[in-house]
Length: 210
Image 1: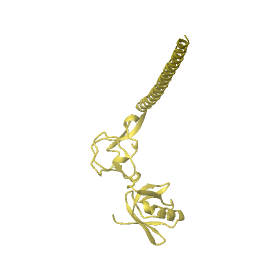
Image 2: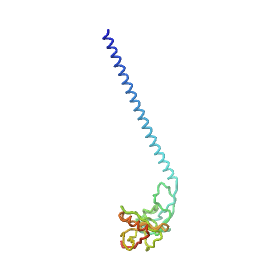
Image 3: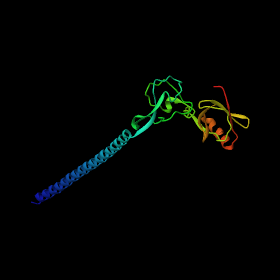
Image 4: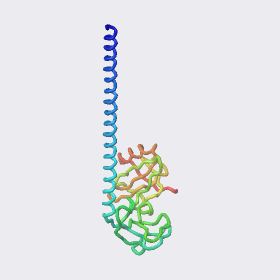
């Protein structure tokens, strides 16, 4: 009788332990499922928000009209832009380039051949107003606004002089702004020296052959 009682007690204890393990497993599985569902919901919500924002932006861009300059006929590379070969049209913001232009820049010419009815942008033309794209590793340095310089155009090659010493050769005129002056493109290793000379007002530029 005593052995039967001990057997039943041991069996009862093991059964309780088994039930506790099963409950723990079910609880753990339920928690993992809940975490998974919440994570998926957050991801879906984020993606939906991004898509909605992009759709709203694109809808606004298609609805917004921007005045741009368009070629009226096919233009050759190097041809000057004039009122006779260009005109302004309103186009959806979504289909025009970020650097599209609405007016003819000073001394503007085409960089490449352009088909008729092409929206014009700074990347397609050269002009006194269009800034030069800096070569890789080069820096732009602004010269003093009141600096007296020879007549230069964007893309001209110049030497930079400070106190009668040439401190940079084959620099490029990167931009000409009547209000802000001239910006030079110089190799990165020479930028600090040129910038210091410009800050001290001890700088000049001379045209050089390309």
